Image 1: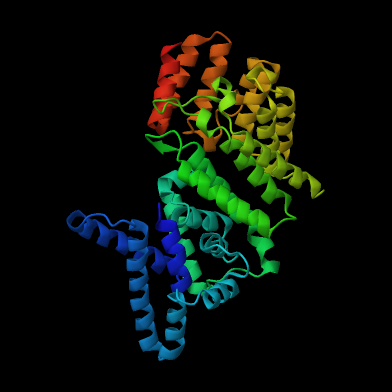
Image 2 (image 1 turned 180 degrees about the vertical axis):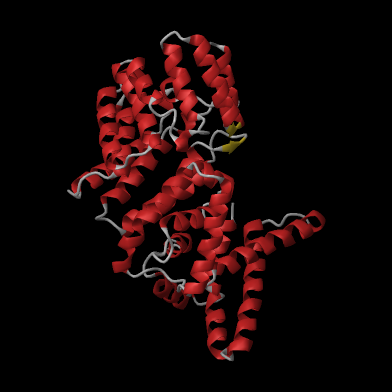
Length: 407
C-alpha cells in the first residue's frame, strides 16, 4: 500500500526510478526480517520510508564520493531531510515539482515521458506507482504477462539511458503527457473498482488514490475537458461503492443495487465535474462520454427508469471516437437493454473471434446473460461456466457459477 509513495520520494532524491524501486523493496525485506522479533512499529509506513531514505542517502554519498561533488550533493541531501525549515523546504519542493504539489502525481508525469512509447509509459507507471502486478496489467491490456514484463524492463532502461530528469514537466510540456497520465489513473481506478484477481470484489484504496490524483490534476488543468470527464466518471462510479458489495462481500450487480445507498454527494460532485467538461466547449472525449453514461444511471431513481436508448447512443459515439472490442461489448449490453437481447447478442457474436477477447471472461458472461434472457438456458449455462473458468477473482467466480446453476 505504501510502496508507490516511498518510490516517489526516493525517485525525487535519486533521479532513478529503477533504483528507487529496488531500495523500496530492500526496506520491505528489512521489515520482514526485523518486525517478527521487534514487533510492528506504531507507524509502519514512516518506518519503511525512513529506512528507504537512509539507504538512498548512502547511495547519494557514494555517488558524491565518486563524482567529487560532495558539497553539491550534501546540499541536496540536507534539503531532502530539512524538516526544521518548512518554509525553505516548501520553496524547494515547489521549484522541483513545478506546481504539481504531489510527489506521486509528479512521478506519474515523469514516468509518462515522451521518450517512452505509450504502452511502456503506462505499464511502468501502473507497476511501480499503481501497485498493480504484471499479471493484473496484462489482463487490463488483454496481452500476455511476458509482454508487459518486457515493456517495463525496456521502459526503465530507456529512462536510465536517456538520463531523463526526474522533475515535473513544465506547464507547456504537460499536454503531451496528459493522455498517458489519464490512462494510468483510469486503469488504476478500474482495478480498484473491479479487482481482476483475489478474494475481494473491490480494492477501495486504489479507487481512492486514483480519485485523489484525478482531483489534483483537475486543479492543474482546469481547461482540459477529459480531465474533468475522468474525474466525473470516477466520482459517479465511486458513489455506488456501498451498494456494490453485500454483507458477506458478495458482488451486487448494477440493476440489483439498492440505490438509496448510493452516495449523493459523490454523484453531485461527478455531475458538477461533467458540467465543467461540457463548458470547455471542446467536445466530449472518451472519458467524458463514459461519465455521461454513468450519469444516466446516477439520475435514474430506479433501475427501470434508466434511459437505455440514450446510453446506447452514447456508446455509439464512444465506439466511433475510441473503437475497441471492450467498448463494443459494453455497447452490446446497452443495445440489449434498449432494444431487446437479440440486438445485443448479434453484436456479441460478432466479437467471438476477436483475439483480444479470447480469454476475457466478460465476453462469455455477457453472452450467457443474453442467452438466458432469450430462454436458451443450456447454452447460457455453458457460457457462465466458461466465464467462471476464465476469471481470477474469487467473488466473481462464485457469482458466475451461481448464475450457471440457475440455468
